[in-house]
Image (cartoon, rainbow over all chains, first blue to last red; front, side):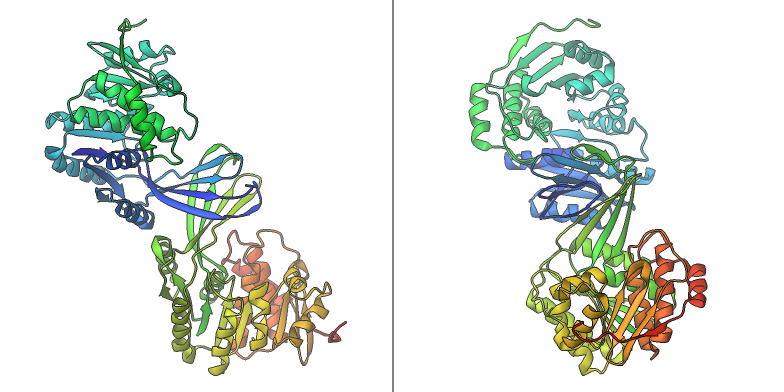
Length: 309
Length: 309
């Protein structure tokens, strides 16, 4: 079982509006609502792949109830941790030209609510093959909150994937996450280093066991203490890149659960990510394209970046 | 007790955003959520005035639960009618220059859900002094749905105020609502007549017992078969006009419940409406201003408009 923690889930609302006019009244033609947050996307992809998984996530208020109802409807196994605050919403207003995003700040988590989440993860870890930590941290938590979960995973000898950015990423490195998955912009923001291999090496020096850097159309670079591997997509894809990184995490978690190495994980992750770009929504992917891309993609060892280069 | 039917209530979300950018990602600084819909505004004002009232409203889904939680928190007496669909949301994005509105279409009501609402109103009417019908009709109902409620009120010999526009207004006229409360634009839309007194007279001819036309800063005009009355605000006010019409309905309902005539109702309604413009949100009013305006306002009989003029 792959255990997924989504500390700041959301109810993602999509409003279709013919032409969105600012500072006017807009009639919404169509409303779609689904459970969101990066970890929930990971769970959707794993579930579609037939990989057993469980989401642990704080939920509160009527919006939390709406998230839970959608998780149930989607057949996603989950364990809610009840909180006093109300789960956040995101609103994507989609018109014929582009999307406008409105992101609520979300609830503050009290220390005892975070402790309850840790206790729940502690209860689930004995049955877990991998722990996935995904997305932003809710307000009210210290920047190093993810370090608590990384430490728990170590205590249970369960490998741990961290997909976060900014202080939520950097403050967790010292606890030694098995793999972190930043994109190029997040790597630069975390290290101040523009060069991707050099920045990845800097994260290793700060405690990460491995770095899987997602580079958009350029595919993936994996760096660990044994070396470095690259894999590029077998074809250029255009579509909706939202959720492509979550599919990388899903493939990575599935690979780690099966004790696969980079030569197996990278082509799978590249293929799943590209197939996700072809699907209209985060958490969905084009299955035929995934199979096709996976057959066509291969990983190559590349020279390990020198520290501090 | 004043019985208020809000057939299409909403959860009104207000998002404060420093500068709202279309086709970009916007971080919401502050989220406010409250139960909305014109009838709920009427109930808030009546409750603040100490007038016993009860809202009957269809509610469904987690958003319906959020509306109900807010009605409870606000101390508004209500009877929900459970529906399968989900209660709608409205989103007002407020930045430093103006507001952008997003209005969800709301649920469709099934015939048996409307029948359940009628049955609930039928149960409550023996205890009611006035029936208020307020706001848009949900999808799935015929345009003359309000006529069912007007007819029920007649059966219980309870006066009935209808505040709606378009077909929801015009198709209910034949059932003989005691008073309808259009604004000038709604009067013209309903009749094709630009002249307010003439348009009001046309609604009388189509079945309304009386017409109370709200004319913004020009105050109110009441027309019935006995004559016509005018009342203008004692002072010009600037602020948020949202909910000003709902306060007119609240004052009208309170007046009808106390068997008041136009000379008493009009100054009260003008004062409450102007005091509502001074308050930041619909359903709220400035109590000191209300008292001051009510003392200063007076209604005057005006020549009855000639039919068809």
